[in-house]
Amino acid sequence: MPTGREDVELSLRRSVRNTAERRSRAEAALQRLGLLHLADQSIYELSGGERQLMALAAVLAVDPNVLVLDEPSTLLDLRNRELLRGTLAALDQQIILSTHDLELALDMDRVLVIEDGRVAFDGAPAEAVATYRSWCMQGLNAAGDVP
Image 1 (cartoon, helix red, strand yellow):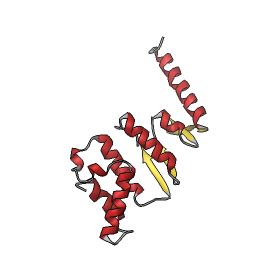
Image 2: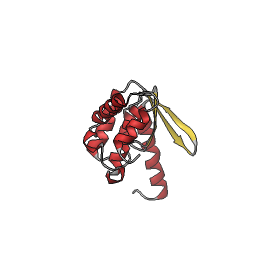
Image 3: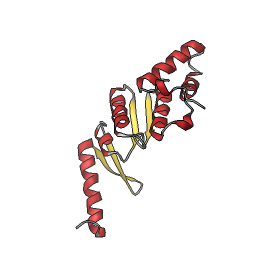
Image 4: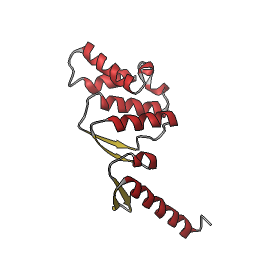
């Protein structure tokens, strides 16, 4: 949709028939992520990070049971990345995400590390991140990239 407000309202169209209620719920979803002041700007005038957060607001507005996110912290600056992390931590929904953001991975209850298309590790976040870092460093050392 042309604006974030319209995009969030569109996501609510099926579940909220009343236009005024739909607008109110959309504004609440935008406010939750600190985006209400950008609600009526063209989506094309927003930064990549603002677009990411607008998309998240549209999804959260419908209160799904499961949230599936693909690289949700991509393009976010530190402030918005921390806003995303705090928002995700406060959600009741089950969250499934793919990410290269190791700090975000540490916030999860369980982490799967995928290597060559297979699950190479399944376990606690801190152990998963440490294992992943170790594998990466071994790979760099083997390639001669790290002394």
